[in-house]
Amino acid sequence: MTWRALVLVLLACPLFANDLTVAWISREPALEYVWGSTNPAVEGWPLVGSTVTWRAHVRNWSGSAATLPYVWRADGVEIARGNVTLAANQYTTVDLARPWSFTRERLSFAIADRSLEVFTDALAVGFWVEQSVYDHFRLLQPQFGMGSTGFEDWAQRTMAFYNDMAALAIYPETPNGVHDRYRLQKIVIVPDRTLPLNGLPDEATPGANGGTHPDKDDRTVDLMWGFRTEAWTTYRNTTDKSPSNAFYVGYNVLHELGHARYLVDIYAWDVLQRPPYYRINITENGAPIFGKYISTFRSPEQGLMNAQYTFLDRYSAIALNFIAGHRAVMGNYNEPRNFASFLNDFPRENRLTIRDDTGAPIANADVWFYYSVANGESWYATNYDDTPDLQLRTDANGQVLVGRAPFATDGKVVHTYGMTNGVSIVRVAQGEKIAYGFLESRLFNLAYWRGHTDFAEHELYVGVDCDGDGPRLVAPSWEAVSSDGNVTLDWNALSGATRYHVYASTNLGIPRVIATTADTQATVQLRGRTHWWVEAEVGVCGTRRSATGLVNAPEANVRRRAVRH
Ligand SMILES: [Zn+2]
Image (cartoon, rainbow, N blue to C red; front, side, top):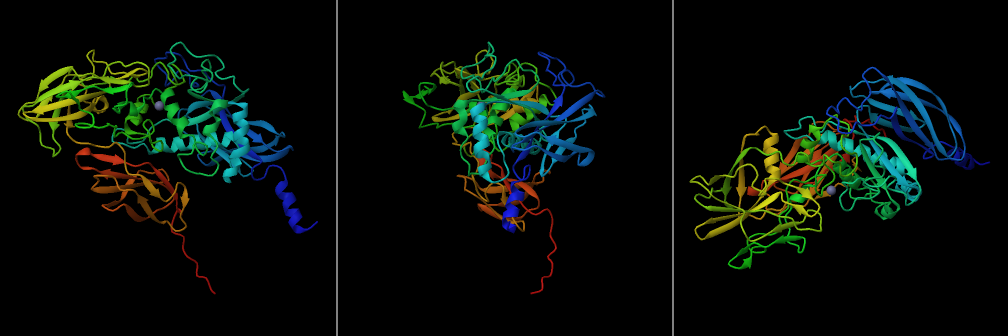
């Protein structure tokens, strides 16, 4: 036998490289959430001091059994070790008993060259996957060439990216980010075309299926998603290690899990003219205003629950922290009955200062509000007829009191199938001058959540055309590796932008501005695993944020060794 042949035999030995993976770590017993609980931060969780079992599910992909040493660690410190025999071609479990505490620990299980770390106080996620989807992942995930062995590793990568996003969702209202983390509690492999296992709940909205409700009766998890045979085509790009590739990371699933956690679609605040489901029938002198006075309106609140999945939007971050540490209460599927329960958190009274495109207040002007009404057969359908629903007048300061909810005649905003009414189209007429603007109920929510429950001030610009998108990142690519940390960050110019602020977070630390420039690139020195993004200043439109990028740089300055030639 040659040396080369011997090396090949060694590599072919079981349980090296990609022959095993730590698939998930469950917490046993698997407790059910309490339907309708008024104390979900306690109910449904283990009793403090009681013993829980952490169970590592290890998948051996090879045809031979093997006995290997393993180590459990808490916050990086070894707490248990042993040996386990992994049966061929199946899951083997390894248990660790510990007293339960709500104090967050990072618990990890390591075996051979594989390990998995979870947050002990995380919400429990369950994935149901039909056999051929599971097999498809097993066949194609390894083609990424990064040690991903199948569905389990993809699922854990997806959990990890969510947990990073939660840590980085730092806004004035969420100075410590989003509290909750996700932990995969179970993967259930089921025969093809069997999802949903137990039908759909009565309140399910159109489009509900085995993806949204894989097993509505399973209350052991806080969040669930199902992977149906029909959906496999979403998962087939084996080359693109980018956030937009669902087969690399399931940001699309994270968006849907956001709904299972009661979040709404931010893009429901967009206003489109796309008949028959999205209609703006307002006219000036008999002619439609769309295309002349207004164009499509897109909410500037970008992020996971809008169309940009690499970071948690501010609105959703705040809403998530209202239920921090809570188990599910009225459904762990998309959508639960507490869906959007925060949507009508409005200050009792609100005052708008109405400004023109230069920022000047528009005094003594007629202000008409047009509400959207039900429009039938589409998600978030909108319908603005030609009759104003509220007619007011600004004072000498361009200000007007609008009451609690100038969005609906019954004062109630809904985002649902067949209707959304979260935006009023506002017509402002001062003499011959006419301009339009869009007023989002989202802004009233934000003011209320900042503590202005009785009274809040808002500004509304009219006659300006603001795009909701932020700058688009160009380079470096996602997860690029820099050998020396000297990196040129590059993005596309955003129309109307005057300056760009580059933010960076090192190893999930507090994000900081590392460059401000009128240019569309910045050469910076990075350290460690760095998330970065760009915020553009766009005059009266405010600021617009890019997606998040990820660069791996050296942890610290590596002292150069003198090399003698
Ligand atoms: Zn959605």
